[in-house]
Length: 363
Image (tube, rainbow, N blue to C red; front, top):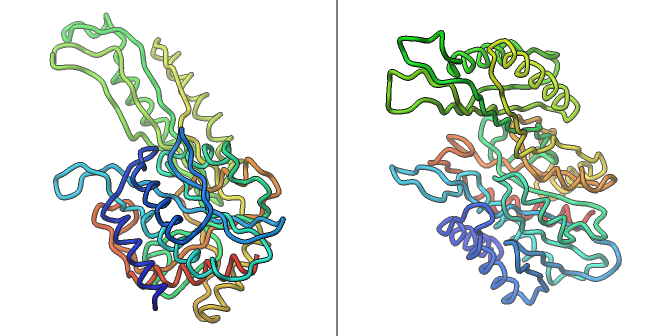
């Protein structure tokens, strides 16, 4: 019961003190304070938020990652940092596992990676650059799941996230008077063509994917000017890294053709890439056994394929051979991840901490 209460206490603190990507200064300070209180060795960085902590002895290193940043969104009419993706819960579950393991006689080292900026999509790269994976053979993550994916009491050993990236574009045409459209190159016509083109980009229906316009900026206060310039952005997603590569080529080809057709230039920049999951069968089997050991066979859920993305998977991309899996914790989470009013069953915190601790024991 003491572990459960402490885990929930950690959650209460982090939930009340959200910070956005790469600005998790107080969050990092609180994590360092917790490590001091627990007598756990840790390492912080002068140039980036987040920290590593480590327990145990030996040459083998097993790691677990918790993301620590919040989203920036409107909540009840006020724009603020908000833990609507559940990273406050992820941190708390990992800390709950640490509480359970720190006094055990371990014949291996367990590294706890408290990573910034998952929502920005590149916080994992910052941790990798600072040695997060040095000597690591197995890596695990954990995340609450929305109710439609997994109910409370169920735990999956692996989340198969998809790949995601943004395509930012700048159209340069020529302004014209509203009465003389033939004298300009209308950026709005180009945007309309892009919108129609994106809706006709098809790939195999056996793999999930999507591409859609999510941002358009053009025109000014003078309504009698046809704007020649505009910026736009696409959100592009696929369930596999291979399909993502194909989609990028097809979209670029189409946009170049549209630019030529309308006599404008379109400058493109791919931004904030997050790779699809590369899940290790061995890591998934370890997590599966942990679920059954702690909660019984009835709590086990098969691996979940989800269209969301997570920069956790950069760890496997950057260190081939790393055996990795992210556990999903059923929490009756509603209305959904990233919703400003996201709620979940707090009992899931203890469930996740116990299963995660057992996973790290078995690895």
